[in-house]
Image 1 (spheres, rainbow, N blue to C red):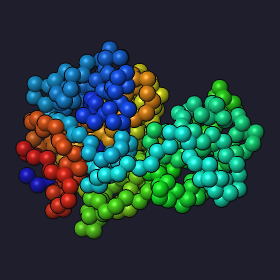
Image 2 (cartoon, helix red, strand yellow):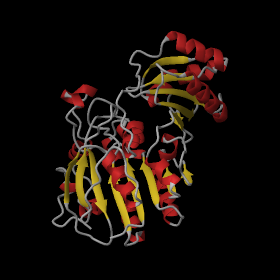
Image 3 (cartoon, helix red, strand yellow):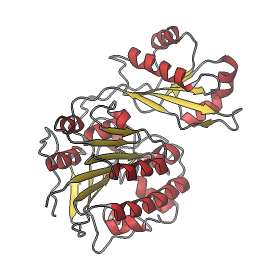
Image 4 (tube, rainbow, N blue to C red):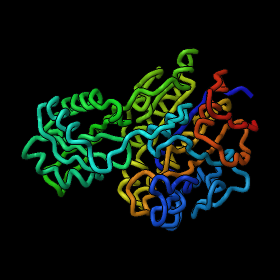
Length: 390
C-alpha cells in the first residue's frame, strides 16, 4: 500500500512507565514514574473510548481503558535513546537526531559571571537565578518584579534559561529581545537547550497567571528528517511548539499555537493544506497539569483530547498514516514536578487497515522518523523503520 500523508501527533509528557535508565535521571523510589498508569489509578480510571479502540490499553495496564480485543492501531512503546528527558531531545530523536552528550543543567543556578554579563547586556538587574516551578517563582518574586522592573531568571531540571516578566512591566517584545540576547550569550559550555520567555499578568501573588505568549529560543538542530523532506520538496506542516524546536527550518507551514484546542484547530487546517507530513505537539498535558501535579486536570485534558481524535479519525483518507506518541513522561502523582524518564506510547494507524498488531518495544524514538522517511524514499542514519503490516 502507498501512503500519501503522514500525521505525527505528540502527546506531550504522556509516558507509559519508567525506562531502564530512569534512576540515572533521578526517577526512582517515590519518584518512579508511570505517567498514564499512575494517573489512571489516581483518578479512578481514564475516559478515553477512542484510544481504547485504537489499542492504548494494549500497551500498558490502564484503569478505565481496557485492552481492545481487536485494536484498530498497531501498538507498542519506544525507549528513549538520547541523553535527556525533555521536549527538545525527544522531538529531535524522533527526527533522527541522537543527543549523545547531555546539555548543561544548573541545579544551583547559573554562574554569577554569566548573570552579570546578561544583566550588562539587557541594562537591568535580575531576580531569582535558581531552579523553580514557573508558577511558584512568580508567586515568590512577582511582586518584587513589579516594584523593581527586574526580570525573573530561573531554570529547572531541564537545560533551560527561563525569563519571566509581567506584560505591563516588560512588554512581550522586549522580553523576547532579552531572550535573544540570552541565546546569543549562552554558548558552550553554557549552551542550554532552550531560552524561554515566560510572560505573566495579574496584580499580586494571589492572582499572577502566565499568559499564552510563551516563546522558545532553542539551539538550532543538526540536519534531520525535516530538512531531508524539505530538500525533496515534501511539504511539512508544524503545529504547536514543534516549529520552534527545529528553529522553523524546513517547514512549509508553521503555526505556533498555544493550547490543545488551538493545536487541534491547526491540525484540521493542516489536513486541508498541501503538506503531506503533519507534525503536531499537544502540550497541555505536560505544561498545565504534569508540572503542576494535577491528576484531575491531566485526566480531563486526555478526555477532551480523546474526543478531538475521534473527530480527526472522521477526516482521514484511506492513504493516511497516523502515529501517536510522546516525547517524555511527566507523572503528576509523584512528588517531583519535573519531566520523567519513561518509555513512550506508540500507536500506528491507517483507515485502510483497521486491525493492529503488536509492535513490541522499539529501541529508539528515531524509529518513528525512519518509518516516515521511508514513505518518501529518505533513509535515516539512525532508527529502524517500524514494520507496517498494511
